[in-house]
Length: 269
Ligand code: NAP
Image (cartoon, rainbow, N blue to C red; front, side):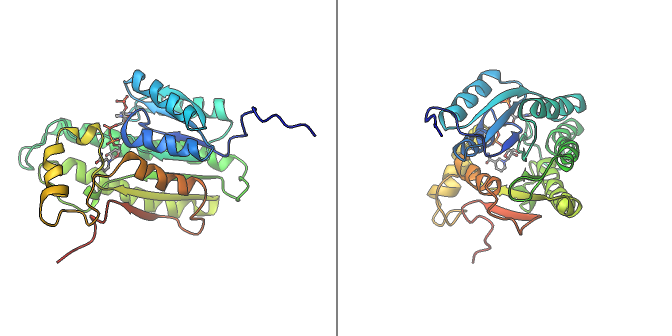
């Protein structure tokens, strides 16, 4: 039997990652590519960043395509799923990563409805209805070599349990996303679909660019630092956790939460 060493190896899994053009989502896409996956790289408006992310995915040994779509919009969510299935034939992994912070940090007593509605739509409503669509697709597809029809990962935040009174809307919707993980985990276990929450700490991305000095001080300069592991998190840190899920390292865990936060969640005296 002849072998062609230049041939691209068969992809090990097919993933849809929302908000994969920049930051954490891009880091996830690259790690999935290193594991031999192919990735649908979703973005909202920054096509240039998405194109760059696809180049990095290819350079890392994977493949994929870019797909614009606002997760807050129903027709866009349907198109995201339809295009991914048209390209890949199936979706083994959905990563609900796309998310936004409030445009303005406002005190709890002054926070406005517009910001609340925006965060609710992008950070919670979008992931909920996208998971619904993708779960139906996964249920309809044959199990993979490990017996799974799919996996879903929700990217939440330490804001699930940390009160920040100048961005209460963000904290509340992330807490909702944590509960959503438990709900889907329970509903989908019998369908061969495991669901996980990944809870990042402070990660160096565009989202935290505006508060860099504040966190430099809290992490690096204060005597003890807010995290036992005294560095900023990197998108790659989150990517490696998602990769472990994609590679099926946690087959007997569902509804589980992984704190990828440098130990921020520890209560210390
Ligand atoms: P980021 O650097 O601001 O990147 C956001 C990504 O989401 C971009 O790819 C953006 O696409 C996409 N996006 C924004 N709105 C969207 C929408 N409506 N539909 C589809 N895609 C959309 O943010 P990040 O820091 O990587 O954050 C990623 C996730 O991690 C978020 O859910 C965030 O809440 C969470 N998180 C972040 C941190 C942190 O410290 N950075 C900590 C905990 C949790 P475009 O490029 O097209 O704009």
